[in-house]
Amino acid sequence: MSATIQSIEAILVDIPTIRPHKLSMTTMGVQTMVIVRMKDSDGLEGLGEATTIGGLAYGPESPESVKLTIDTYFKPLLIDQPADAINTLRVRLNRATRGNNLAKSAIETALLDLQGKRLNRPVSDLLGGALHQHIPVLWTLASGDTAKDIDEAHSLIAQQRHCDFKLKIGSRAVMEDVRHVAAIKEAVGEQASVRVDVNQAWDEATAAKGMAELQAAGIDLVEQPTPMKDFGALIRLSEKFHIPILADESVADAKDLFALAAGGFAGAVAMKIAKAGGPIRALEQATVAQSAGLGLYGGTLLEGTIGTAASLHAWSTLETLHWGTEMFGPLLMKDDIVVRPLNFHANGVDLPQGPGLGVEIDEDKLAVYRRGA
Ligand SMILES: O=C(O)C[C@H]1C=CC(=O)O1
Ligand SMILES: [Mn+2]
Image 1 (spheres, rainbow, N blue to C red):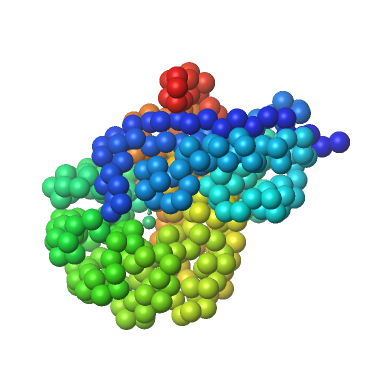
Image 2 (image 1 turned 90 degrees about the vertical axis):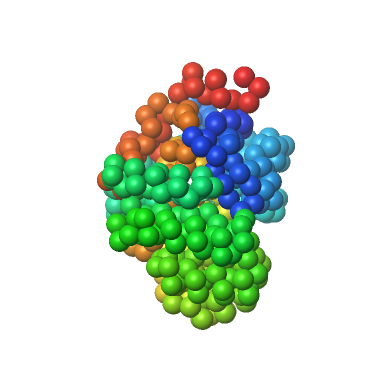
């Protein structure tokens, strides 16, 4: 008899950020995580996380709606079911509920953690095995101030904590953004790769102007310049410029990526476990990207250590991550709720060791940061 799922708890956790994090659609001062604790009939516990950016500013699921979805709709479908039947449970959830991929990602992650602990194997082994134990991680410069961003970049390069940077642009006039980006690129020179994320803020004509300027300034990659549903614009821009485009909001799962690739898009894709509905689903995108000749990038919704560890286990199984990853979420938060934080060094992070995700909750810290504490 396999163990069955006995309880699922979805906990809202609020942790302040180390500095304001300015994106085109919101400025974050706190990150809210939904931590899932799933217990089985053998007394084992699986951990999962769903996180988004700025409440409802980034996408249609908020931390509060993720908790409600799990508590009200997912729990009755999962309690008393075999805990090791990960695919069966995914199909069961998908037949009964539409969308809500962030909530589904937290559940798939908790099931993988549980299964790993049961088999005494890391989650990466359940996904076919890790090819990398150390994974590159960039940093997002998003203080909103050019001089502060340059200081931050210089200090991180000196510490060898990061050598690639992503700049959040799109909230200011295009040429103001271009001057900001060009000043940072000039300050770091060849020491660092500089990329931008526009988070859908430009229309196609603005994007054409912006991309020409960014190309001239030596920027390496432009992420999601135009609105997510406007596949035609992404395709046309990718044909027009040699500076590559990274598709983010446009491609939640493998089907989205297939449609974009079939339309003629050339460039790369930001895989995110949250967008896709879990680590297994996110890796389906990698297969499509590899078949279509698109580059891979390990993306984040600024998850804390649990969601970041789950993503790292998935990305570790990929032979080539052409653009590395941005799995720095835990570093943007002032504190953590785990016993052993991830080890960020040498411009990357180590894949956590041990059974499951290799992450353990610090109960005292959780008690401090859980909402309503
Ligand atoms: O890429 C996004 O759109 C979301 C996120 C990832 C890094 C960051 O600073 O924001
Ligand atoms: Mn993005």
